[in-house]
Length: 306
Image (cartoon, rainbow, N blue to C red; front, top):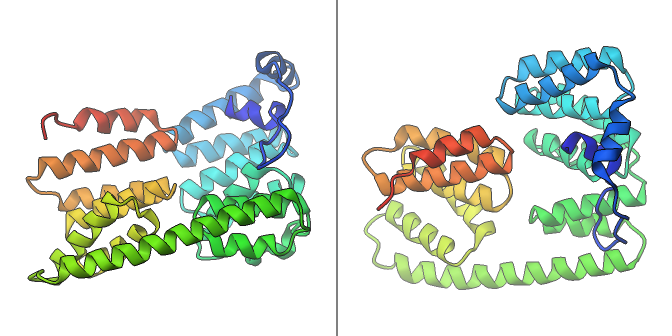
């Protein structure tokens, strides 16, 4: 259904008119009639292999689809995502750019490209000359993408480049409100942490108290920064891996959360309560990335009563 969505479901954009209802099953059947059995078999097997993290096989199957239909941008998009998951970011970027060039107003194609760029420590500026960056809808989608990620500074920067509209005014207002709330939480949390750390016997305990306070107050953006600092200072403390994974999940960086949490399991020793927290966050992250097999596996590891 996700595959069909690129063809039969119009993109849902912030503060735009709702698209008319579409009979998805009927549209999907019409779409499938246009493709050979070989294409369908290879494509859906590729999605299956990608879902179980067999990325090399998924890529090979998608490349077979490319041979059958060289201009199919959905295949290009899936190749970008498969290479991204396999940490082959240069290849992923090439396919992601191609898909966005073909459909500059597609928000999913843009989000995939942003994911790949951020993983390499780059911004959209690195590929601006290779994509239709002047497209107004692309910039609106980019601003919205940054806003959803809590990257308010870049969101405002992009909004300054678009024409004034109800969209830009509404999103700017929401961003400013979010920035004010974040700053207020930062001041409040800093005061609480200073008082909490006054009697702390060592810096590691100070980090633990600070992190627990941030979790309790839902200060997810700040928690992302503090947990990173704690983990760099104390790389063998399981609790800090959990805190980092929790923060990444809350900031919708689920794949990064999986990587950190799985690494933290190596440092987990005889702490069932903390183990349950690890498994809960891993299940959440795998559910968000549509890997239900692994999500259920981690849920089954949770021990009740702790």
